[in-house]
Length: 418
Image 1 (cartoon, helix red, strand yellow):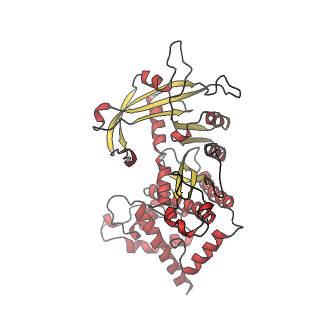
Image 2 (cartoon, rainbow, N blue to C red; image 1 turned 45 degrees about the horizontal axis):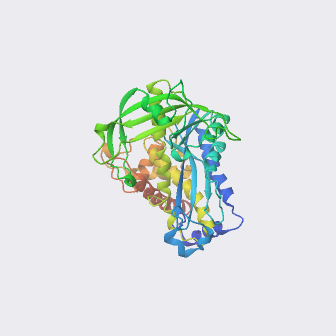
């Protein structure tokens, strides 16, 4: 709250707004996602990716400030909090964030309980993005591997890339052919070898590394998991792509990285298969936004609001801010997009006046980007966040820069009025 308000009076007013009974959670979600959809449509892309993921907001550290029963429990079934599932639109060429276009918040118990139907969040995103652009590709991790979802995706004329969670049953291509997904991919000959940067995963004890990966792909037909029962759906034909880390590259004591991806996109060449892998890897942009929402950025989990529902409302508004912050970080080299989509006219004038104070006496200390572009504005904001010009400014630097710029801009506006 203190980061969003410029003085005590604004903090009180903002708190009153979030606690007001006439400020509804669904209205805030609609406003936040509408802004994201408008930005996507303004960008004019014929094809966008929508990467979906879920995060929990754990409020154990501040549980003494509000009744725990309002929120229900998080994933450990004891700490109070709530869940957010969001879809973030990205451009398919560079994976640059375009905005949050779908969001859902719920509790396990408490005020906004989905009951036992949390899997509906994936279907909700599919409906939300229908007609967003001429072509939409949903990108899901293993939790989104739901058989019925393929039918909804096809009915909505969208595409889907998901990481397979289970060794699904197949209808074999020929008598005696593989009847399981894992075996079918293992039976396919490697089509190519390529080098890949594998990110660290502290939960699995995996260090970051560059490895050679074997690429396989083939057409598969998934058998309905309800075959022979009432209400069954027919089989669905998809393309399967496997990326497997070569044994020689795996550190001692670790398991090879294996991704098995399923998609509705056509995959007939190595280039098309590698494109699917690239789009799947953009899924981590959603995790970047959730990181900006929590400890690495806005720290919504530290909120001391007295109502659980008010914290959820703050979560929606903070999600929009976190998405914007993540966009600025990823667009730090974007000289094509105008900064006016992130900053108002007066804010751009203020940035222009700040520029000489942020630049040094040498060419390497000068802003190298086209004036009024996003990259130009982010460079100035990063300097305000105490970035010294080496490497690339990250999330914390941009956040600090934006906070400092907000304070400077307030003084700048007061000076103009006096």
